[in-house]
Structures are given as structure tokens and as C-alpha cells.
Length: 289
Image (cartoon, rainbow, N blue to C red; front, top):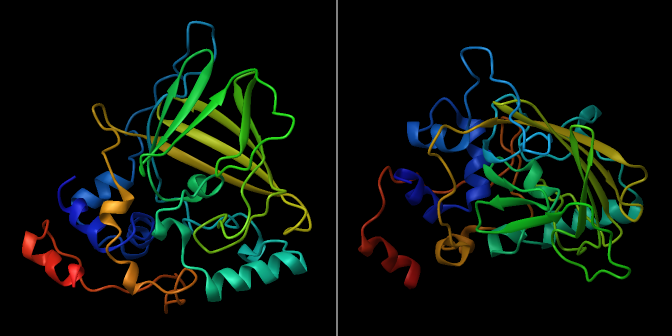
């Protein structure tokens, strides 16, 4: 991953991805290529299909610079304001003031946070399963045509079932873990009552699109929506191995919440300048101390 590896040693990768959009065009070429896809210069090829006629969602998918603000599940709402209940607002204030970003502690972000993230992902598909592979070496497996468990154990990705609605792949998820998990990179909360419905479409070979509805009566007064389009990666591109526990060396610099609001309106903890190349073994001496 070139200089990206050095970046990951200094910051959580989610923070790097969010910061990348903020400080573009000052990114290194490797960072740009890793995080963002490119719109096709000619008309996109038709949607590929499986032998049974469904759109093939598989491939390596990267973010678009058109998705702003990245990492914010409320990006499509007026003023980016989520419809919080009093309990939801209290949970948000707790996350902002007393909870370190769970992903920075190597806790799975889950859904819908991974869909709001700036990070690329990969999809593998057959007639019985659609599997999402995430950069943290996490995966989410959705059985096609299954039913929800009667009493699902709470999990980070929830109890998820998939079905085809024409050319749309619908994922219905319940049974989530609640606090202190964040629903996005802005510390917005989720409860164990959350219900997420994803509608995935592939309009052509170069794009994949999500329409997401989140319902959480404990923390939000009404359901709200989030939409997003990703771009296909280049042939031969894919995920790289990444171990959160091995790269989680910047924890001492992190405070509660997603960090202060900067002058440009973004949030995050400022860190020392990032090295352009992987550091030498001696660079880890201060971390060990």
C-alpha cells in the first residue's frame, strides 16, 4: 500500500479517509488512488448479470468525491440534523464527551457506519450469499431468501437477510448492538432497537448505489434516509490486509468524540505531519515507551 501504510500507523484509517476529502488536492497520489474511484471517460458498460439474471454487485468499490460530508449519516438531511429523541440527544452528548471512537479502539463499526465511511469495500456474490468485505478485515454475509431469527443475539452487523426486488438487492437488518456503538463518524448513536433497510442497485458496470432507511425509535423520532454511490475500482485492485490491533498506535492522542470542529467545519484530532514513506523500526521506540 506504499505510503498509505505509514499513514495507517499514525491515525485510525477511518480518520485518514475522512481527512483525505477535507485536504484534497494536497493528497499523495497513492492516497487518492486508494480512496477514490474515477468516473469513466466513456459511457459506462451495461450492468453485468449473473446466470440467473440478477445484477452482479461483485467488485471492488471506492468512494466518490461527490459524497460530502463524508462519514456523516445525516448528509442528506436539512442542516445535516438527525431527528434525535431526548434519549438520542443524551446518547450523542455522551459519545461526544465521554466515548472514544469505537473504531479507534478496534471495535467493529458495523452497519450503517461502514456505508457512511469513506473507505473502499469489496462484494462477493453467488445465488445464495452476498458478502461484503471491509478494509478492517471484517466481513458481512447476507443470506438470500432467509428469515430473521426469532430472538437474534445482538451483533455489530445485526441479523441480516437479503432478497431481490426486481433488480434491487434489499438487505433487512435487526438485532444490533446498542451504545456505545456510533452510527457514523460524527458520534451519532444507535440503540438495540435499530432497524436498517438497504436497497442496493447497480445501474451500470461502473457504479453501485445505496438507498438506506434507518429506524430507531429509542434514539430517533422518525425514520430517516441516506443515499450513496460508489465507483468501480480498476482491474486488479482489491483489499489489502489490515490489522487494527497492530496499527492502533495513535490511541494515546485520541480524546472522546470525533474531535473538535476545525475552522473549515470538519471534525477530527490533529496529528503530527504524516511521513511520506514507511518509518524505520526506530520510529516505534517512542510508542513502546
